[in-house]
Image (cartoon, rainbow, N blue to C red; front, side, top):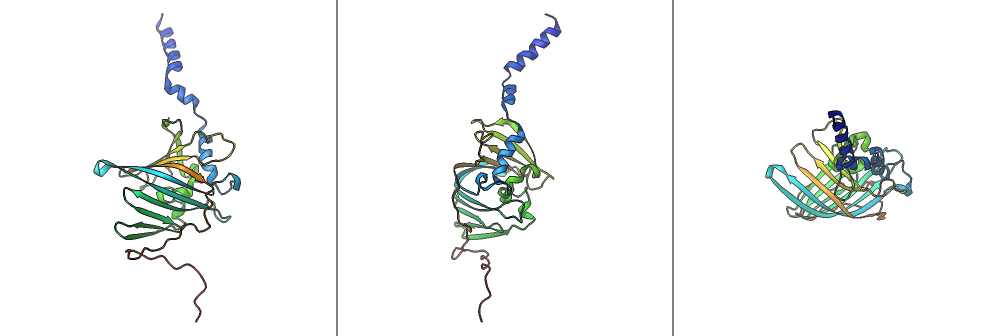
Length: 256
């Protein structure tokens, strides 16, 4: 057998037996996976196919590079998407209740984010302005931008492109580059791709920051159509806690 024939036979054997090539051949189009992830969270999606709200339990694993250790956590989350004709994307109202590693509550009405740490009896507050609400590099407002990922990020299949359960793993890098966020990794439920109806396809997210801190959140026991009220997450300042108080709700001026 001459060298040319041997090289051709080697290439043929690799194309047949290399498992990496076999997996790549089975991947759907990247655009189909991205569309599956975005469509339920877009303002233009019909009500029957849109995700209006959801509840889920979650686990979180964070790699703390500075301490050279991994920290685990868990809790429950509820999110409501409020759509308005005047806005290009729905507004995400949410409540994250951490049970471990320490009790913590994160509440947002779409304009303000409140964080309460019972152990320290402290309340923290941050504003979500019109500019901040559209920033893909802010992990707090990431849920609001789920319908515009292809606009805000450069998206590609990760390596490997599937997790152990066969779900699709996407690698997202913000554009323009951000000093707060190096990359995102999103896992999309394989059963949702190509499905006739839009479903909740977000299985997990991993946030890569410049310091090497990489929290991964996995959603479990997800329930959509939770029928949350119009204003589902009011924040009441805990008695005795240190920190700013909520502003009084808008209303008519007091009577003289």
